[in-house]
Length: 339
Image 1 (spheres, one colour):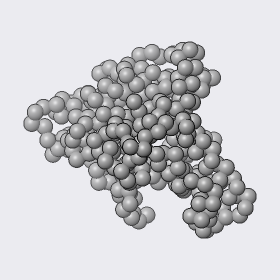
Image 2 (cartoon, rainbow, N blue to C red):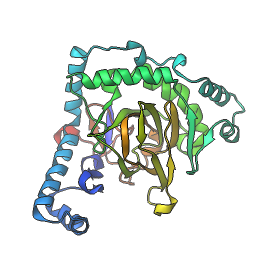
Image 3 (cartoon, rainbow, N blue to C red):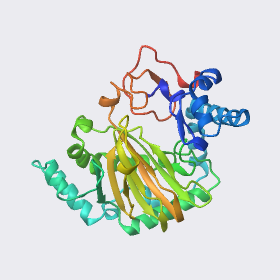
Image 4 (cartoon, one colour):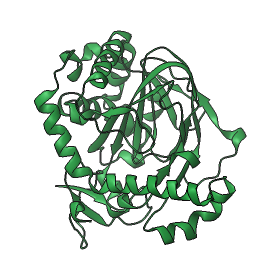
């Protein structure tokens, strides 16, 4: 049984033209709360407001119908999609760099500790953002070739979220059980327990894994935001690109000045691990094509008490398809397809 917090259906709706996350219950409430800021950004005229409301309503409708659409996409993909590089769908240690396997061996020792781990990995200038090699170049090339094959396929594809219009949800294409689950439980959780002990004390028991793609004529950058996760993994898979550096501020709800932002240049096969609450974004791509693997790893014991998106006790909604990592039922439980 899967659950979302009811805030999923009206909070944190991204408006791309304004680079703004908004809450939306109805037109009247929206205009009362946001007309001033939209006017200040040059989007307060009647035509712009109409287009913005239409964009928001489309996203809200997508969220309400997400479960049914997910099930239908999975059905079509299972019937019609043919894998080109089957080996990339199953995690193998041959896909991992020797350095990462060395780090993992340390983390599995009974006396492993945070300081010992930090001595083995590169800590970026942004606090609590950790960088280490993960995948071999050969595996990155094989995976991006399969991603190109998926993108060229006519089967329907669920896009990652309202901020990323290009990329895929990996669970829909069969990466979940044989690749993403063992990657999270056997390989990433030992690191995360040492680096983020408060958030991973009871384990990371679910995830959302997806690919984001940046290319000229498509998405070029990513606005400042935080993730719906306790811990986030971000891996650069290539291909060849320039620009697109990541940048980090402070944790959500903490003010960050422009001169306090710290930039990070992603390298093929390199991973970064950070808290989901850590505010971040991506600078515009200048040239080429860039694929990133993103895994939002979640702890039900943490989010059952406080939804990271609305910062309140979650009002849980039973839903079709994958949920958001909650495991407890709510007195106000209802089915998301009827909202």
